[in-house]
Amino acid sequence: MNDAFLVPIDQIDTSGRIRDAAPEQVQALKDSIVAVGLINPITVCRTGARFQLVAGGNRLEACRLAGFSHILCTVRE
Image (cartoon, rainbow, N blue to C red):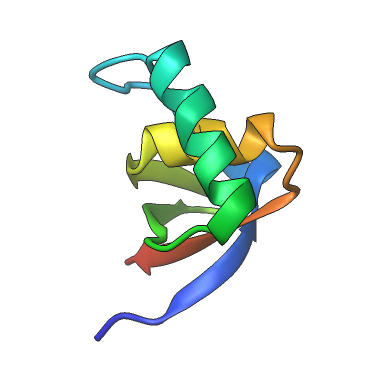
């Protein structure tokens, strides 16, 4: 099982994403995350001192919208 870590949202790069986050889905997801918390961490890989998003773009955008400074991540090496 992979461990999850809190990572500062401003250290996660999203360049090269296949699709943009859908605003209506992000808003609904934000409401859910605020109500019950983030159930599934996003997946990132380390790129030097920063991180690159692998999976969970809508969750990342929802947490940004909710004003979170950190997000739970599974870090792939």
